[in-house]
Image 1 (cartoon, rainbow, N blue to C red):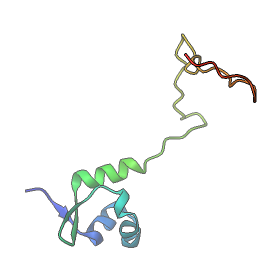
Image 2 (image 1 turned 120 degrees about the vertical axis):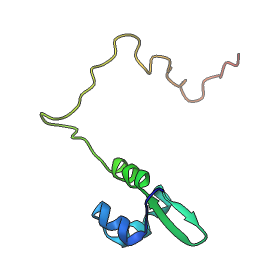
Image 3 (image 1 turned 45 degrees about the horizontal axis):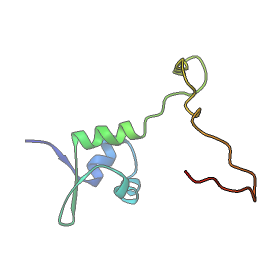
Amino acid sequence: MMRRYTYPEAAEELRVEERWLRRNIKRLPHSKKGRAVTFSDADLERIDALHHHEPSTGPLAIVEPPVPGRHPMAHLRPLPPRGAAVRIG
């Protein structure tokens, strides 16, 4: 049987305040049966992953090299000047 955590138990596992869980419940994975809200181990892992941040600068930052080839915005064209005739087709 899968372990289910109540608000206080989940807050203790995640090391957050119970109030934080209650305020953010609509944005967090959980199960609800009637008014009873519970969290599974998988829910707690997903909540932890959702709020995990990797460094964006410094020696531990993961920097992806640019992909060679066509620029991702190469298909964009500038807007015509204001008042210019618009060509359809």
